[in-house]
Image (cartoon, rainbow over all chains, first blue to last red; front, side, top):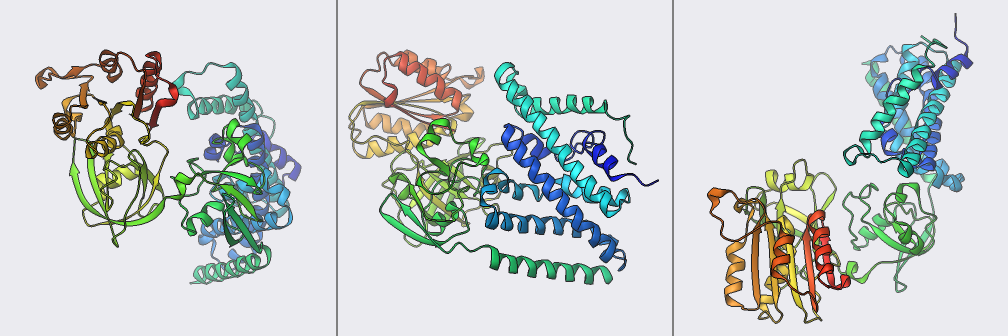
Length: 196
Length: 357
């Protein structure tokens, strides 16, 4: 039975959260979760790039690589499309939406090497999604990552005000521990939906 | 064969697309960068302020090479440049924000901009140098002499630092100059091996005499106040030796016109260096005292000098700090302790000059 796109979308946010159940994209997750507005900007930028690259990689894989029997180069090609589309997106935003520049275009170069983006394109192959399913999966994964990083940023913001974290644990240490606790909490969603 | 053809043709298409997009999307026309209200640099917009400054031979400190991770390339922007970006918020303090401080590597030039750079930074230039001499000073500190090429000269104040461009990495690391300003055709540094450190590993493991290296500098407002005649207290630990040594030699050349006591803290005799050199200066100039102290002397070392943390030694030697000034260089905990001690003894905090690293 084909999964409904809406189901995939919700599952990608909650039960199969790309940050908290696959622990992908940890580097920006730790580095960018210091402030809420930074975290949110990064999250939105990741979502946008994820949807665009997945939507590009799906037709490239199915209409170019499969017919020419060159699936072997899919990894390289996905990375290239990601890098190129990030570059293009940056130019377009700078030119036509300069007011967006500050809120998220500056995160775009960081995203080029973010493994969550590549992961979405690879999951779409593994799980044999259709184009529509892929787009919903990418959007859901992006929003799920945004959810995780904004929750983390909010917790870290609050912790700065009220908690007395031991010096040795400050920074990445305590953030990893919180990420672990958040991941445990997200397990609570896991029985609700199944997408594989 | 097929995959190769596919990837080449896709790469080709993407490259063409990007070139076309760049042609049509990125053009800002001519922008002017006004420097300190006097100098005008006209540039084609689209790149970062830092890269335009560098290409116009204005070198401001930047350790990461423009990646926005070191926070050194701060400049004051008085007009234009847009608002502070989230990537800068971590490095720019609230007070600096109010003054319009930005990180040059994050300011993209899209229209004309007015900036202020301290005069002390404008003296910095890029120099080509050859490694003239490498020498082991202690088990983890090496002495390196860079000879400037093309009969170039460097003019700096004792206490300032220069940056080494690490070949292949495109990053810069700062080191205090250990030689005195009168030696203007070379730069001497003392480099401590930091485990995992990019530049110190390069200097210790890779660099050989005869290698060519790019240097930028001099930078820094930590330097000898030459217009004062107050007595000087110098306190250093480890490689903090370098700038103080420069100050000592500079003063010795002038016949040591001011009184100076130089306290140098080390762990064991293994960590002491330049002891003979400084003791020689001491014996020639009665105005100068060199007091090395060990915090953890081993019994077999038969150390007869001072023992204890360097701040405790300073406490024993210096009674009143009225009408004195201090130059501190070393690890942050040492500097913080020294500042606390000196102010407690009555020194005006404004006369304590320090360089933490």
